[in-house]
Image (cartoon, rainbow, N blue to C red; front, side):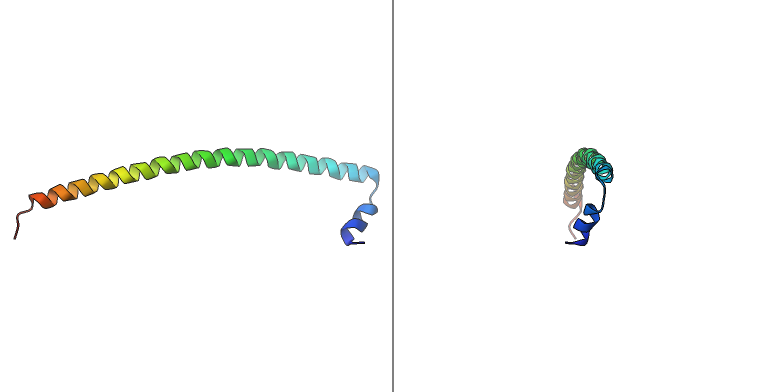
Length: 76
């Protein structure tokens, strides 16, 4: 038998029940945390998308300004 199996075979039913309850609580906690993290990720992805759009708009405006400035420069 593996060490893991031997460890559980030495435990009483009450100890197994306690460990099982702890495991269920941990699973519930992790599930709730996973839901919160997925929601946070969705918010961050949305914010990132908005920032990428704003950055693209700013880049286009700067390019437009530079283009107009080049048109107004006298040729040397």
